[in-house]
Length: 333
Ligand SMILES: NC(=O)c1ccc[n+]([C@@H]2O[C@H](COP(=O)([O-])OP(=O)(O)OC[C@H]3O[C@@H](n4cnc5c(N)ncnc54)[C@H](OP(=O)(O)O)[C@@H]3O)[C@@H](O)[C@H]2O)c1
Image 1: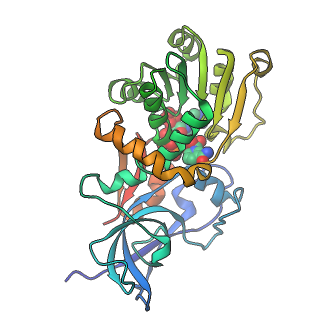
Image 2 (image 1 turned 30 degrees about the horizontal axis):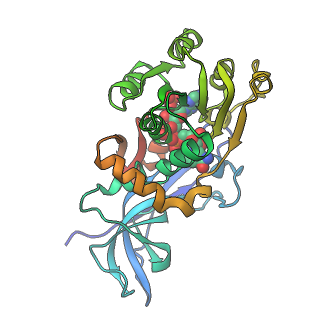
Image 3 (image 1 turned 45 degrees about the horizontal axis):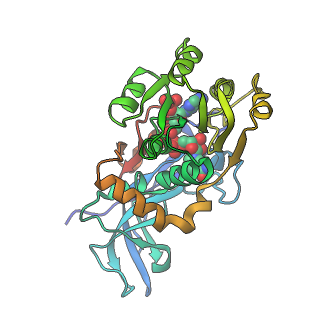
């Protein structure tokens, strides 16, 4: 039998600005042994998410990670050994875990998932919290109506890719904003948005205006900065902005200013920030929708998958700089 090796990713130091792989270290640790009532799990997939940048910088402090601490996140894990009668080897679960190959947990922190027809990784992408974020933010906060124009930033990423597809499902014109031609092609050709505009192009403002001939009714905000400012100038009366994220601000050196902020008043725009945790109580309802649309082929899923726990820091850093297409995951060996 192959020897089991247990590795983990710890935070080596806090980044002041951009996170690099130098801010992490890989440590080899002992294999845990389950006590009575405990379950030994092997991580199959780890999710790496933008909010962790704020966590490791010490800005988001409700779940702190200090230098020396092991990184954490959502994961899909397989039960290896169980001393809880509710779980057995062969079960696959969703959970919050450390960035670690093997770990122990109690049954109440695990949710069994069915991978017979749905790939395990989808529970961290199109059937996971990224999708729940898009579902709550777009459908509940954004209130899109058929025929309206919905613009989504970071449209090729985990949350944005779902938000734009939900807009299409609701009969809206979905326009994405993403970095680079390859991503924009993916957003239109694979995800089925009506249009996608490259915010890195010098023609960004002109291209966006051409893509929204009837103005913008809902703007699903993931990035902030000049992208937000440009969108502001095209908002319709009573437009809604679900404020999901501001990734361009997370490392900003300068104060962020908006030339078109007055549009918020002129057009009586409603902006509402939300967190995925607001919608966790409605997870079953959201996932029933997502599973139906996914099985009907209305919802496409794309994942970028890094291999091995050693590559988790690279996957995280690459995702922050936009090298991912769709949800960034790490598959553990
Ligand atoms: N409110 C909540 O509860 C909640 C939950 C989950 C996520 N979020 C937020 O939602 C946003 C998307 O998260 P995600 O998990 O789906 O990540 P993601 O979109 O899969 O990956 C992040 C993407 O952000 C884009 N990006 C990075 N720096 C940028 C910049 N300076 N300007 C414009 N775009 C930039 C990159 O795409 P490009 O190549 O297109 O630049 C990158 O691929 C983030 O702001 C995140 O914090 C919020």
